[in-house]
Length: 177
Image (tube, rainbow, N blue to C red; front, side, top):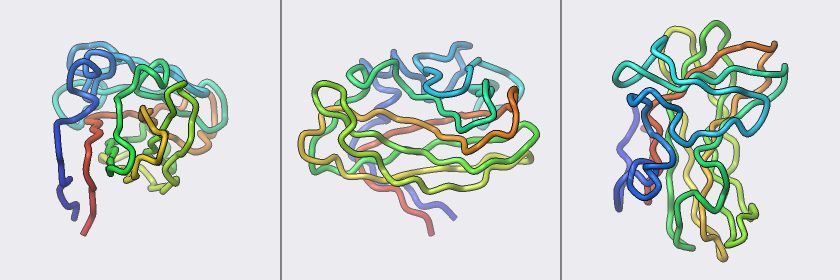
């Protein structure tokens, strides 16, 4: 069973000005600010959805780890306050082959350089249902921005498809019971 996020504010991905850059759901038919950071291509699709009728389709372009990020650059991601806790949650589903997946936050300095990435906590996604992936982290000293990513471990071939939907980033902690 999953516990609630102790939220101290709105979904930072969905709230302007940043919500106009990265979508937490994909109901508008676009990829909405998500970028193919490593070994993948992205598309909006109606093939699967966790909430609504659409999701983000992530297709491997190499038989290697792949991940999209929620903004084109770190300095266009949401602003954080050092010392405060943040949570990233994302739902994923595999098309034909389940893989280990993790949600991670990269805390960046004012120049957009990574100063801390939350630890990877892999959970196997599924071809028959949606899997929730989450991470918690405290913004370190000098952190100004937070880049969100969903990391798929070692797709076995080019063209392997996974889906992402209902992504949220909040100030506060998420816990499971």
